[in-house]
Length: 389
Image 1: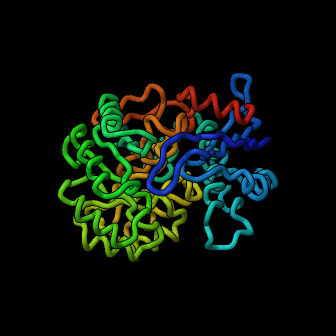
Image 2: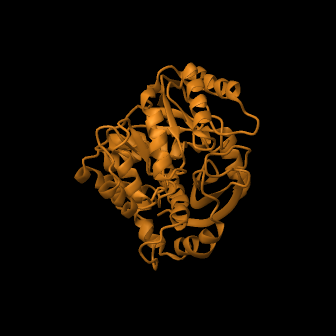
Image 3: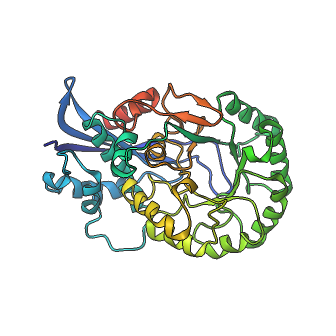
């Protein structure tokens, strides 16, 4: 029986000059954890790694004070599944012991970090890619060998004009992406429209361009943007208003016929259920972006997916936020509609394995055990250095 002998918790800076409509990333950080096991392979312990997606700061205090102690103090046998391997689903209720319902906040991020590391460790112990473990457990073994992905970028940079924006998008196309996403809401509407039209000169039709307001707009502004955006036929109009303002989202659906996307800042199956009940989301065109790494991890994300059918949605409506390898494994193993990618920003946490090929916005899968961190040299180097493993 494998035991976790040590848990190491570190904070890594992922700061940059970029900004979206709501925040800048000048002081952004991420938590990185390492679960060291007593299973030895090639003379070294098998280690599971995890981190949190961008946009939420490192949660070192929560991890150190509550969630890591619960894991280390648990009976080791309580973590073991029927196959004799560590089972992250059995760890989840142990992590959430003595937590009141509601008020999900940043604790969902802390649990998500540990959940990722547990899945990485479990798949490595099983000597299988994580997507295979997920598919065998929850998808009758069916795997999407290629997954849709889009390049997320187009942030506001100091001094970055339209030519620089076009050059950025052109570089994504050269790397195999067809669909790209840019930020809106950080400048007046007329300037954003100029950015959109510049982007369309590069990517082609609106079906190849998504825009993201990062929750910036009140209803009046959201409607004004919707009316201006609709003629472009965009891939989607993302998170126009506050993520918890379901009434705004529902009302906007009456004014915008094109696809919309939201959900990346909802961190529980209860919040997801409220969006599905009250947010006016349309299964025939809209997208759900719940981020497994921020919303208590894969165990809770599976609960979210189980809600979808009663509201007319399917897994094909889901393209998780995060732009990292964990979400790619989940998208492949559970048959989701796709996965975000950050080819250039939040390096090295964004993007896929070093050898991953992207063609027409489709990406293939890694074949290494675990999440695949070891196939991304800059990322695994930082994770090992930060956790001294």
